[in-house]
Length: 245
Image 1 (tube, rainbow, N blue to C red):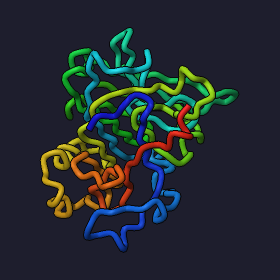
Image 2: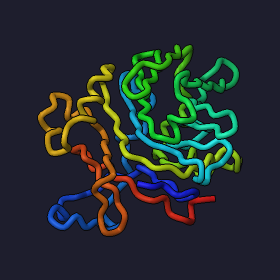
Image 3: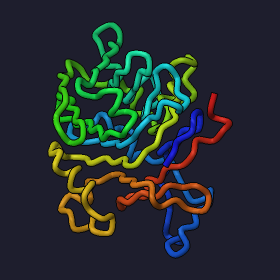
Image 4: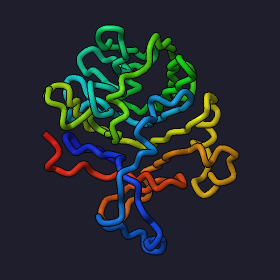
């Protein structure tokens, strides 16, 4: 699926599918705020994985983010000028918050252009990054993430469209193929198993209930809702135009 420039998606609501199983039709009236996703980066054990590519001709900000959270700039970024992929975030400090940037060592420009899978694993105070399920780099958290990132919403194709600082909105056009999140896991093999299984066979995994969201971008309904292959109905949808600056 192609995410257009300044047309980010977000994962923000819990959808009630009780009356829409047969025709995959979803209305705007059957969703509510979803607190299940508010603290996904604060959990002490998880793996967040995304597969994407950014072609040379795609429109992006000088620094763009394939995913991000509301608050101070946070997410997986790509700098087209320096050709570097990084994870940016803020942590708590004694007197003031601290900005952190973890540059992924083995992600090259060709990886971004041709397609790459990047996994972020949190294992207590360690952040570990994997390129195509192979370990890339590690970072030790000296303090926890700021509470800003407990605000509801995960954006795909931007950091935070309503950021008051224009350059920190980090808009990005890219192709996306996979997005998933497993809680209470520090085994990269768990993600590989998801990657290799047909979605109909996911229920056979002993950690199926720990998959909070999973998208292969193959099932999109009549109003553009991207279906979640987990049990939690954490669907993706386009951010309303009135919320994009």
